[in-house]
Image (cartoon, rainbow, N blue to C red; front, top):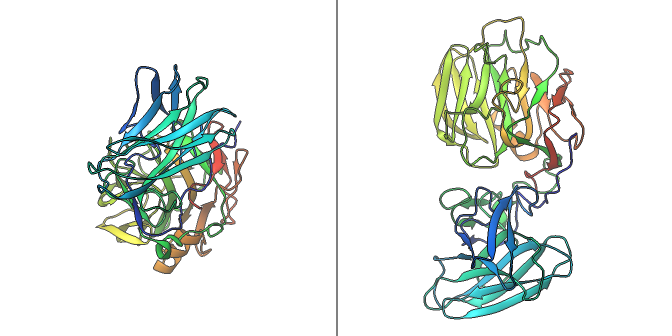
Length: 414
């Protein structure tokens, strides 16, 4: 049975002033790097059964009182005020502390009595002359040893508690590697790109590498005679290393039939984009698969184009028209049943039998507003439950969702 994920909800857009989040691994999307447990009685584990933002969080387990987990920040200015915050969740009635080692003293910043849901702890402290503070999430002495969940940690210069952000948010960037570096927010004027309701789509599908959306119309050959096409997909990969085993769109392509089209990452461990067509393949060296993105691959009969959103990244002169075949199946989220499934969150996606204008691409990326001309297939993935996926192209190419997929609130909107 499909199920509604418990994950929360203010994911992809943020409002607030320009600033930097100094926590280099703020939401445990890949691992628990840069965090540590204190003493033999405290451990920190990355889990995906709950989260406040995105798809993972940290779980603190202790076997003794007054234990904690912490992250040390080496990029703060000395003798400067910073606001420290983190979201926590745990057993009703227990107390969690946010302590700060300023570099010179251990300061008990704030305490919170847990209510069972996600709550935010925060405090403002002045960093000592060493400039290397430590944020500690600490269990109160005398409390039990139940698990405490931790997510969305932030350290920002100043005395104001602003909305949480990291590099995966609209209007923000990672300053180096995704989920392993500081984040920068550019400010309100940029973050309005996606507001609540802009997409008009409130759900998405979380695929775990063992599921995909399959078009069930059988012998459909809607692209075979076309000299132009566009594939588009809104994606949020969650695997620590992408590979060609993680496919998005596949048309008439299988392990026994390599004459079709396939949109996927390049090779093992790569975060570059590949498009496979009947006579060969083309790899983009400029388009990095880094997080929440809308990706287009289009062909005008002569040139294959790779787009990250509305930005053209690579072009190749190829012969990409598919060979004729009476038996063509189409998949979204896998290459063929039980083979090369996407790992991550899959949003809306479409196939056209023409190329799109720059204005049309922008409308799709920003508002999921799909033009109808030559639209062959459109999945919004907004059903929220069940396994039947509506085709909004008007062509009745209904999809069937694997029962192991997870319905969740969309991470692509605020």
